[in-house]
Length: 640
Image (cartoon, rainbow, N blue to C red):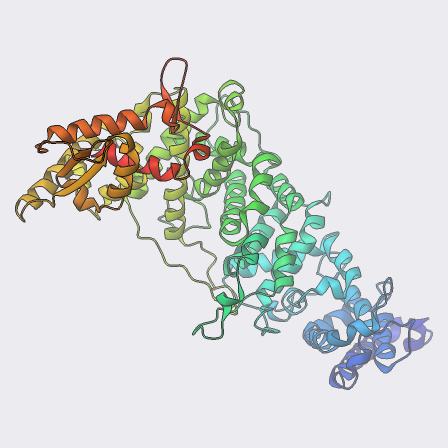
């Protein structure tokens, strides 16, 4: 009878005095262990079943005093929280965890874990009356930032992940992110920064928290916001294959700047947690309630759908830049409806010509930027796997009608990014040891660069599909703003128009590209005409080895030399030069003979279809060791 022990027979008449004594006594017990933690470090994780050591007796006393059935529990816990009890407990854990392995007892709970288990559910929700405390001294900043917390306290992991506890603390963290508040304590070590440990511990329990029946939409948005914020500060994590390719020579002591790295086990904790189950559950929580079918009077996405799209896209964009893509891309493509959901959202926004503002980007960033940054990489991944029957007949993953609409959206976005509102490629660096910057916004310039690259790749792939079997007019790929000014700019190296021609040539109609090419040739001739003549090159070619001789002598020529005049002398089978001066006719004869020889199916570089069209021979490497170099050389000859 704990109440009787402190209050005697009549607690109600002595309530204030008894509560005060219990509060002081509970704090004194924790304070005594904390002040002697270095001397007691080997006993801090001992279970009550193992030994009656001083830390065990003192902490078990606290366990009895804050039992939820006692009338003073909330008052005692509030008193402890006001005196930064989580900071004291953090220092106990950090001090004792090195020697914990010696006393590890599976299936048993240490007295320290029992104290934490009883305090963390006091979150101010009925019937609890505990007040909210300063985030700097809270459970999430002081305890959740301890490396591999759940390995130390597996029972607390269960308590935290289930019920309302995790939702409360995740929401508190999300409020700190929104207010740009950095509340994390000092790092345990350079390899184990607090923000990364917090991320690993949150993600490890996120799967259980998201699978709870009472997991709310707001919980999904908050979780996405926090993980986005913390992932953004993390340096890119290499895949296991990339890591194995890094040799000891790459990490020599002679390097002037050794970039600090995240602990490998911590990296593994983070990447293992963002698995197929987590991605599936997060997308389900965020998008469950939104239908792919449209109503008769669809006025575009509502606030809740905009919030879901913003949260999911911000998280996935940062994940694409930080985590190995093979971990997540296939899951998103084939285990979730992400592509269909994002397409449904983008299609409706484009039709009503209104893209809602997403709070994860600065105010002047277009609303389509973030959805495209996520949609394009996943859709591109699907296009590399889908076959002809799925694409054309089954119309998966999108119908051909929707793809025509998608081409318009991508074309307009790409033209906007590359021509109307271009940005230079940003140099974005991350420091491992520093906490996340106090800014939850994603860098718009980095996203614009990303979207311009991946949208170009998707449009290029769709143009390939359209070339195989036309489902849209080729003009659908052409930008509307290609005019005489663009064509004049495209002939000049380093201009925006010239860069567009290299990155996204399909935006420019063929007739315009032909004009640009002719202008470039004319300017080259004019430039060389004012600086003397081109170099003249002379070659001896055996007629019966025309391709091999031409390749061995001409493949090393520079671009400038190739533009100049080429003089050819043929050598007969006896090794004697044929008579005649090459005034152009012999070179023409040479070009006709070499192309006839190279494209002859007997030579082995090409094969022939039933209607006598040529295509590269898949087995050309078995016939010619240098088959790839020959193909490249043929391109040079055709250009000549």
